[in-house]
Image (tube, rainbow, N blue to C red; front, side, top):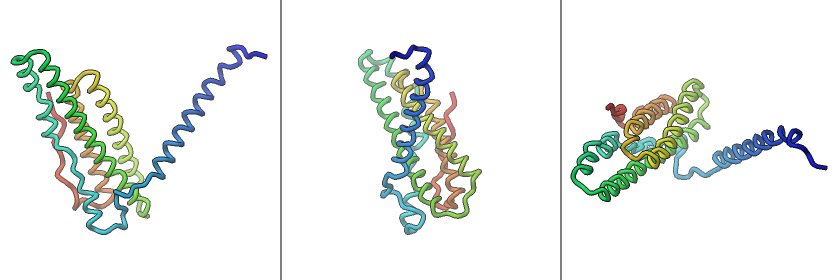
Amino acid sequence: MRLSNKDSSPVIPALFSIVIGVLLLGFLTHWALRGSSSVPVAGASPAATSKALRLELPSADLIERLLDPRDLAFVRKESPAETVRLFEQERRALAISWLRHTRRQVGRLMSYHVGAVRQNINLRPALEIQLGLYYVRFLVLYELILALSYIRGPYQIRLMMGYVVGVTTQLRGVSDKLLGAAQFSTPASAPPPTQ
């Protein structure tokens, strides 16, 4: 006996939802169970805590200089097309490297935060939600910029890189408030660049 398309149409969305749910559950389980041996927990020594919180977020000035449109204009004016293409490839690689380094540093901060919160009985739900939203915002920007850097090129993502700096600064500030670790803060990065 064969089912018609009318009979099987509700099955496909339900099956799709189940597959997505299982994948999401698997991802969350993996994330919760993965080892975080490189990130100290709240009960760790003061030296380990200090090292974990003294994150080296890449400088906003570095990315501003790296993606300066005047450099591209100069290379376009003075060089053949092959050199311009090579120049843009190298700048794209540097911008992606900067972005991935920032992602690793934010990941370290969030791993430390998760470990510290597990042992903290004085949770502040509003700030925890704010931190989570900043983190999701960062991850969305990260993925979007990564994709756009390949599609549009490094100079088209310049302003968005500034927003990454702003979001990481906000994320760091909320985490400092939650953990009471303001004494370990690094100086805030510059605000997003303007055109």
